[in-house]
Length: 268
Image 1 (cartoon, rainbow, N blue to C red):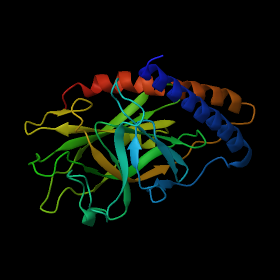
Image 2: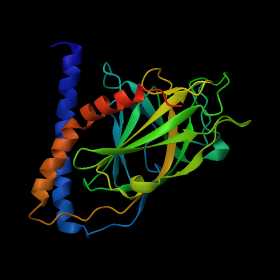
Image 3: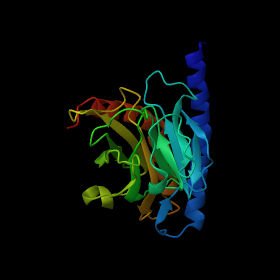
Image 4: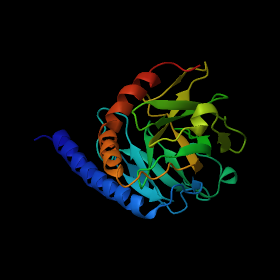
């Protein structure tokens, strides 16, 4: 068995353990949770300050936050993100958001990596708003007015998805700044079982691409969620759990096929 096969086997075993935990959480939710929960903001204040490798995850305010590489050659541990403290300005020679725009804790997606978010009970949720900034790969170059885009892709339990894309602000005299963004339309009112977040990098001609340069980087914070779906009745939770496990098992493969195809197109 070569190294890649060993890595895949290790990742598969880890996923199986996590899916088993998720199934148990769904069962527990049916017994103890009410039919709906209040709005929750994923603010990362409880997340450990740490580098995020491909396959790493943590929990924050009732959500799993996973970090993944989109590269077909991605290996476990490849650097794809970091939990950062805005008041700490050490940024590895990258162009990070200014401390003034967000001194608190936030997450950066690096090297074309993406974040994958699910509720710890497996229930659905909607995204209402978030704060985000572009993260430059270098601190000594000039960036265009729109240096990058942020795309959020929400997956429904039937396997379909919706996306919204946002333009991230350019560099000011004090550096990149966090902006506040609201979701809209059907995306804002749809409850998803899983959400993927990734970045595009743009050139001076206005062409933007993802997953092709290791420069589609972003910072995100204060993800406001709302309207967690009702807990399934006891007689239906097993069917729901089985479907969710099946969805989780193919989610990453599906994302890489759908998102990579979409990301290769040039965004104006």
